[in-house]
Length: 79
Image (tube, rainbow, N blue to C red; front, side, top):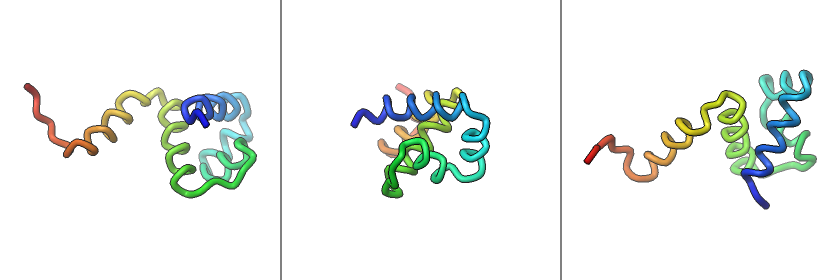
């Protein structure tokens, strides 16, 4: 499964439907599962929620970089 493509699909569906948008604000897990049409494991849902929120807020780059920095020790060294 192409996660990026699935997140893009979910974002498109949520942003075009005010009811889904409200559902996502109130209960992101339920909204993601509703749009995806399946009950997903928590780790998958949490990743999808983060991806959808990032795309919906336009914060995909900074949010992604923050998470990546944690993988490499989180240091702010510049060379």
